[in-house]
Image (tube, rainbow, N blue to C red; front, side, top):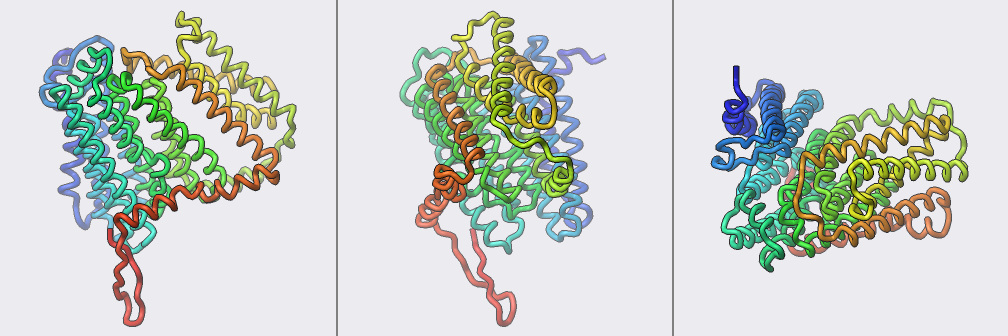
Length: 532
């Protein structure tokens, strides 16, 4: 019988097999015979190793045990690592299986399989490492490997232009990462995450170099998380295969939030960096949520949704609720992977919905009842939650602000249920969703604990509450008066994305323009393509 200590002693080697399987499979992937089937088998094996690793990390956390030799080999094996490894490997398995049918008969399958596996190997290494330099190198490799997938169809100029823009943004983010790590490791004397955490926890006030490093980390995360105005490439990479879009939106773009969670002991003491993080995330979340309502393309609407969701994740980090940011990362990854992989059946779903009996016409009393119901349910459950924990409400301003956001999000759902059902049905649905949110909130509080209190809790909570209340009011006004002066003024700007990407594209193309060489594809025909 294997004891717990023996199990934990094997855990680092078991965890190391996950990126090794992905990386080794990328090197030996067959060139002709079923390369994507081979990739699926490799992902299945890695998923099995991830489940065992995740179980070991969970047992270590429950029993209070320390994984031996993990730090010595440069690994960070905790509950966050275990959860992320299971998430990454499960998404890899689903995307690899989907790619088999999606790219059936495509001659580029071997190249696709190799770069897909290479991307997964880099992401798994990033999740496992306990060294900031290795993390930065893995993030760079992830970006380079993903670039090859985004340009899979090299004969599509739009895909190449979008990939070119992402390449420029990512390299700027890499420069910020290198500068931040150099400053921080010089101050701490080590680039290990454990050493940075211990050093930051011992500081009453961070020195200027560490504050600067925290700001550079925030800038790097904003660039790689497609925050405004660096978001345009995320909307324009839809020329890539659908499983690549799922990999990007469900996995790679979430790495910024994961980095903030890893650096939470440092970020919790960097007031300026957290204020910048909160401002960037809140601005992006509000604008992207409005712009998304004007999009008619399913995949483009999902891309704007990702932009808004990344902004909200950074808002949670800026408020210091790191455990909720982790919960949001996992939920968003699973939802967005399903949304992209099922996007082809959206039209069929719309047709089925159109055949159903129409709901009752809209009415203002019913809308007010839905809003009151959502506020009452969320407020009541929040009060029970705070009373059960023994904390007065004024000690958790961040939770109050997020409860308001939850009530505003549930109100339209409650309205839809009221339109097709009874008040009792709507109340049961609303109470169920609110209860589930706070249950997960409390569960993830035990998964990820940061000793330092958030430094911008009260100010940040007020900004978040006001921002999302304004967003809700604008959305309701546009829905209620679609032909009013406010809608006629705002809609063209929303449809154009406030012209932010156009301005950013002009600047980047002036600095480093793409080349459009002309190559001859037929005796009398010339096609313009882009080289990145």
